[in-house]
Image (cartoon, rainbow, N blue to C red):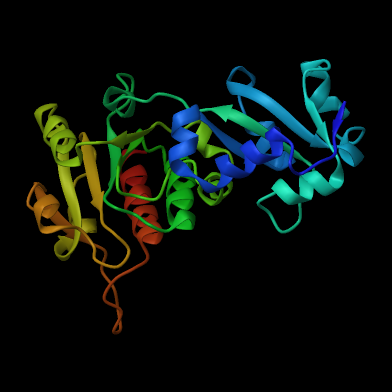
Length: 258
């Protein structure tokens, strides 16, 4: 059976999952679109696969592991539910993984955690997650008032890292930071009043506070930092994009630990 009507319940559900963060969390699934991202999804968290009729043969090698257990829609229907400018014809509904604070502190590695307060730009968050994997960051703590982790733009920007980097969405950001401090994690705050990051030792357990794109860190959160740090800059530049700041800090940690 091929779904040919945009008023069918399944296309309606997918559209709602793409647009609504609360609906994604209510249903416990999010949408992953495009063959490159599709290849990155662990098979055990795929709930449903949706493919455009004209692309079934092209993606047959990926679909065969599902037998006949995937949904075919007309190209018109697929175009109506796609969140990309150039639809590739394949998407999946993926289970939201339950992550805990302990997941960002693995026993086998020295903790290196990014603590993100109220980030709003999907591209920034996705880039930070991708960078975190590349730099060996052990996990990310994301405040609940940030952009939704499963926003389609965030998911695409991670390029698959969302499936491999532990991200804990914190309902009590301050409380969780205090919990990290109890576990002997030194908390550094990226701040204009901070000291040069290249004068600090990051070889021990550490966490890095990165603030909102427009306002930086709140005073309440800044006061929790054991030390304030900043990236040295020339010219008249006062601050850097949140994703760039997180990247430079993460790779300085990696450099020191190699």
